[in-house]
Image 1 (cartoon, rainbow, N blue to C red):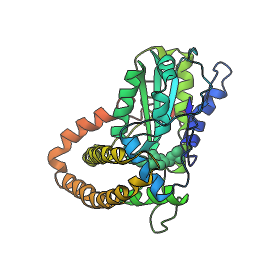
Image 2: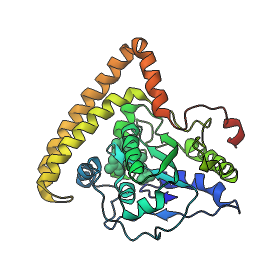
Image 3: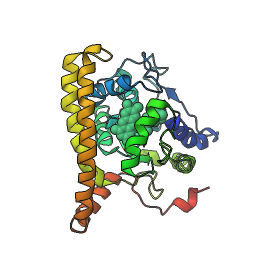
Length: 310
Ligand SMILES: Cc1cc2nc3c(=O)[nH]c(=O)nc-3n(C[C@H](O)[C@H](O)[C@H](O)COP(=O)(O)O)c2cc1C
């Protein structure tokens, strides 16, 4: 199991999932904590936060401190929690997946990805799938936990949380982050994985976490995600040409970009949400098909909830 978290949110989700596995004498768990050589700050500074986007968008990994793994470990199952940074897997997790050891550790292995983010994770999961494929891993399940507040609220509360360290910095909006009840309820995934491991189900191709409301994707966000991914990529390329991470030469361009970004999110996101809500009756079938696709492999069904909801 991988572990990296700045605010402790993803670490708490990870802890809830791993606990039932650790409590089982028949299962041994290895937790690998990722430590970037130059740690990312928390709370973030305004510029350091923005400065992380070019490398996130281009998935240019930072150096990590030495891993405790050697590469010859033979895990039955790999749990891979990650947070989303600028619509891509966070840089420390990307660094692990692009590390030479990742191919040795993950080749042929079943992997369960676990996301805890604001609410835009679909493009990041596509990138994650690509990196897993490069390592020869088999993606069995995906769990996605998101901030339950409305998109237009968390769009502001998330950056204020990350820049101030306070979830309720904007008092007039709901607190930022995944809600405590959803985090506590993530235990059900650990219980289901424990049972699946006892039955060697990880060796098969079927998801281990179906019927547990693992994912509830929102394809209405896809248009905004795609527009923002393209913009991060293009501007990221420009910024990377101007200088490396942390170099002052990037700052004027970052200011320019933030103005562009605020314009983009206060126009494209609400307009795209509005157009989609107006055309919803016409597009219902198409969105339902997209939802089904992004809910894969674990799905949004609830049929096994009664087994593990305690
Ligand atoms: C630099 C940065 C960029 C982020 N970009 C996104 C994003 O594109 N989509 C999203 O849903 N959440 C985004 N988040 C929120 C994170 O996914 C995550 O929920 C939050 O940082 C808490 O993670 P933690 O477990 O590391 O504390 C971003 C966070 C950071 C620090």
